[in-house]
Length: 603
Image 1 (cartoon, rainbow, N blue to C red):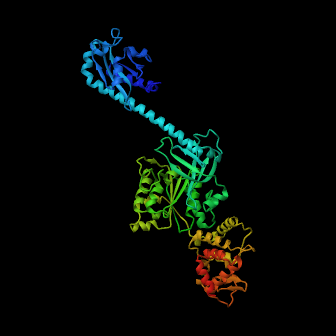
Image 2: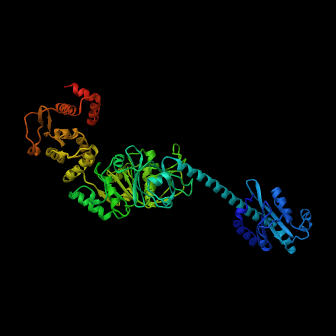
Image 3: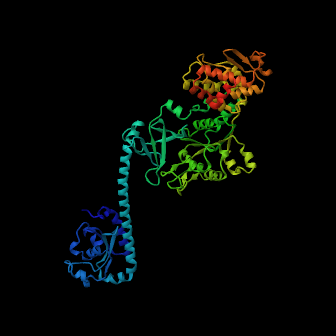
């Protein structure tokens, strides 16, 4: 059986050269089989020879594990008993054991064949021995490192064996986003060749799906795949790896739309819907500034499409092939937001995931991070974000390892940050750091000429989702929608279209009786006319002077209560009166089932 020192023969060579040159004495190393592994001077050409016949001193050190100093071999009892006693050239020897795990694996011998050097060695013996002992310790540490690596290799083999037998796709990346390991299922899912190690896998999009799972899009070999996945950091626990991506299957376009509650797909600035002068100015501004790496602050009322603008900036910019990571700072509790932004390592705090977590900044590194509702950050996180923006470095919670950031920051808010600064509720230095490139989005009421185009996009979207073809919109509906103030902006318009599309009948026509209650109430407050039809005929409520041009006013005026009842009965006639349908209608109307029954009983 080979000695434990034998595999380190080449490593030991440099150490004996160091000892020999520093102490000006010949050095040899023997293992526990009394085989000379290394030597200097007269022993250089005697490597791999046995020293059993001349190794009485080494044998004793191996047996006792205690260093032995013999200053005069000719008078030493151990040497007198040696078979090589009269032939031995050695005059002085210092033998120090090499130990590992309470075992003596070998001996370092410092030897002099010169009688005249004996006095010099005696004078320096107190420095010789500690020096050689330190070299022995270094050798022991090298052996320990090797043993740990062997154990790690065994663990990694077991780890890979487990990964290859799980029913999910698993990809392990290094710190350069290159594949370090991938199981068979993942290779098939991503259509990769057998030898795909070290291929680059880029994360190009990351967001939460409607069921609060992580939805990611990756790019590999110029192909993009979208999947619901789990990303777990493994560094520094496995130093050669950085993160693990685990996913079930690749999502097709239909599933993807459902999974992320699809927004408009933005490819370029020009694909943003809107021909109004205000939106043309916004798009021109974005085109000029999108290549810049400076921070961008998008302001505008809720529902104006700030995230869509952020995605367009990303698509138009020089980081379009890098990740776009979005996070809503108002949607996450303050005590969790820091870990969402910066991630954490294993055991960072009570309740932390055992595998740690990669934060949004780290996921977006190299690309763009979009911080929505930035005005809702606490002072603590404002200070931390400012430091990250200034230093372009951060560390996961619980870690001292700084991660360099190469990132473009786009933030958005519907609040007046400067007003908050003046009120002492927002850091002035952070405000100016964020507001390098300001982009103000106009509310929908100030760009009414865009309403029809936006509405058409939503009609097309829900036509596909609801499998309804050739939907027509009554002219009166179009006029009413164009005159509405849209306090909820584009988001409210989408909700209104979705609501009306769910009420479309066999005639494939959206009529005024399908308008959402909020819009009907708006015109009622303005003393407007709203045309509502049932089996008994049509009723029109009086409009103010600005709208008389497109309706015929009749004398019959009904109350909102009567109007509401007519509308409910129309829905019941159209979709059915069973309990399940009533529950659905009540939900769509934003009321409880009991309230629906009460309104019907009041008839």
